[in-house]
Image (cartoon, rainbow, N blue to C red):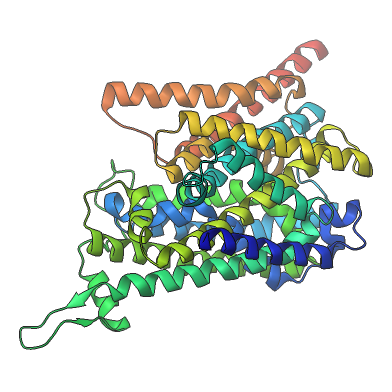
Length: 482
């Protein structure tokens, strides 16, 4: 009941923010917040939207299998966000885009435009359902299951709440709700870290048991044997520095710079300079944010031991303690911050890119409801098939679905060639299929499994396919002329 009251109070605040920010809402407010959002609020809110409930549960548990090597990828994120700030954002602002995939239509052709939009819709729906699955499972375990309420009712109620506070203001409301949700997330995270620190004790031979100070806790983490960050000596390992660093840079580019969800928030800033400040601040802040999560994981492993699955580490620690209330608050804040913006961007992309009716308010309202219903179905589907670590599942799916987007944008930005637009959909579907076959073959023949670098391979195959269609068209045109 206490958890339920916390969640209800949390949503009362969200509805209050929604009411204040959506009084004169229209399509421009829903899609772009009238281009008046303060850059510092956008940056702070984007941290919470990127972290999501998956990070809250899975990143602390990563220390059990990979220590702190995930920070190598976070360092790569900084490079990726710099590319977004100084390469992609100037393009988006110069073209005054509402949906970033409009660029593909202007540069490569209509089928390229539609392919990019459909790949985003699939990628975001899958990724967002994976993330939101976390909060539904947690609430089911602590609230709904003891009350005898089935999982499907849990999911429907949670998605309905998102629809209620985003249906009018859209991205204009989310700029402010994301700020509140990020504040709740980090408050909960820091308090849980202090709770874990309080359960560690130093026992000198000549002194009674006492709690660790902050400095002693930092020293304990450093000496735990689980604080390794950099791996330079093993090229086969998926945790090799250069693999993770480069993968992190490309993941940041595609999952933020080529993602309508994240870029829609950046495009709400007043000027390009504000958007660049927002992106650079957000990129740098990602490293200390994840360092906190990994440090929590080390503390929890010292309290609970290492004989458990990574995703079970934090839920096991909080169960039966007062920290469970902080845990639920953090999970709800992280997951809703990610899911609400995902549903808003999915609605935006469908109306602007697929239907091409950005001014049709009735269509926008109807599609927002439809996207919520599809979202529910995807969550239930993921629950039925999930059998892997959640954080890995998100990035593995991203490697397959975001790769073609990477190839399309790189071809458009860094070449002057024109591909055969008619063949683009087939190339973008073939590239992930080839990647899957290569991954299977390397595992069978050489016992090598692709890690997050699969994203780069996928994008490269798409790029090569687009270039070959241009080359084929060029040869055909040359033969006809002769």
